[in-house]
Image (cartoon, rainbow over all chains, first blue to last red; front, side, top):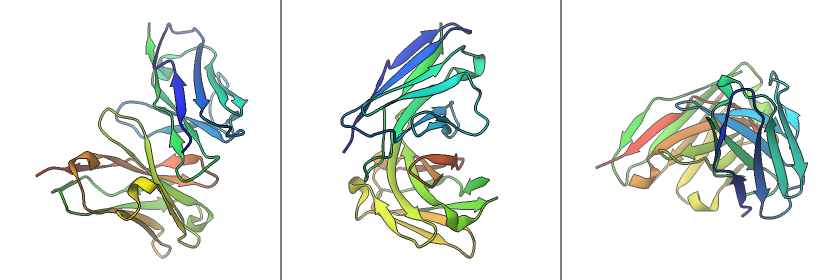
Length: 108
Length: 116
């Protein structure tokens, strides 16, 4: 089973600043990685798939990069609605698809 | 595109639960469904996948023997049944439309509470 490790667990950022989240895979997953955002009481929302492709309608301030075992989600200028929990998910090897433990972006 | 799940359930330990997920706004058989659960305050856990086209299923080993995923193409509905419920099965259960591993659309979630 592929283990995804996200860091940091919590990131404190001021509105307008840049946020960078990391996701590391226990073995190569090529570019088969997605990122999701989840707000309290809501279902997850797809942000990025195939490591760097933005979901339909996603603002350009969100970007994904990486391949192999190291991946990054960057939010270039945080807006109030971006403070949330973010999960990465691999779909290279199954079963199972696996998720990272999540990273929380909070207001500094 | 919308996925609408059935309502919250309260079950006793040892019982079974069956959650439904009705799809609309797209061709049902063009996508599969992943089922993902989230215990209170915890992260996301993938349970398995079903092809809406031919009903092929792949389950996480953790749930093998306890979960059954099915679909009904006449009503565009996917189902997830979990048996022999335990208190640690208390969670929000989500269905999600899945074509290539990533889930583009999610249901609103169904809270399953297991309590004596």
